[in-house]
Length: 230
Picture 1 (spheres, rainbow, N blue to C red):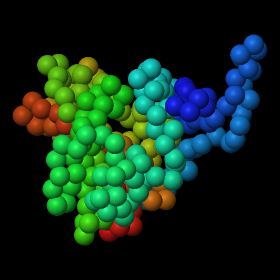
Picture 2 (picture 1 turned 180 degrees about the vertical axis):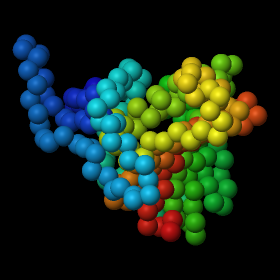
Picture 3 (picture 1 turned 90 degrees about the vertical axis):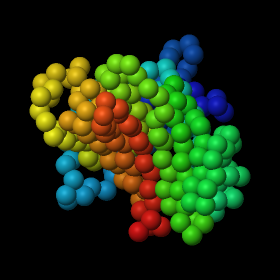
């Protein structure tokens, strides 16, 4: 993938990435610095560790690679997009270039397209300080199976940025459709299944979850400060 400033990024099947140079004549790859985002996140003793995640190939679509490249083009000292936890409402408004949809005392709402999927971005504040942010997927499907495809694509995107999740868990409340993965999106939409994956770094907890009821499914990607939100 290419970043906006022309850097070449090698996206690996195990979810890690690194900056490289490629000789156009020989296609030889020269590594510019050590690999990023290896699976070095904190682990919780109560969480279910996904030990085999790094062994599964991760195949990125063109839209996923473009979104990953855009994200990598943002300075990595930011906690979410181009903002940091603890910013004021005005500082976040100055940093976020998307069109503002809603402004309330405790949150800001924007529209966005993530890996080709329409969604909304919410920034949440406490005492005028940013404590968490969220992508809320904002589209409908006639076929519930497509919700599961969205979830898997978004999880791949997060693996491309943050490595393997330390928790990757499916919780079944009714096993009726468990053996048929083509029905998992439908199972979520009627409340039989929830899916969740969790990452942590030094400053943030990142969660993607899919849950549903009444034949509707919802996907949220939550970024939360580990310090300010306590």
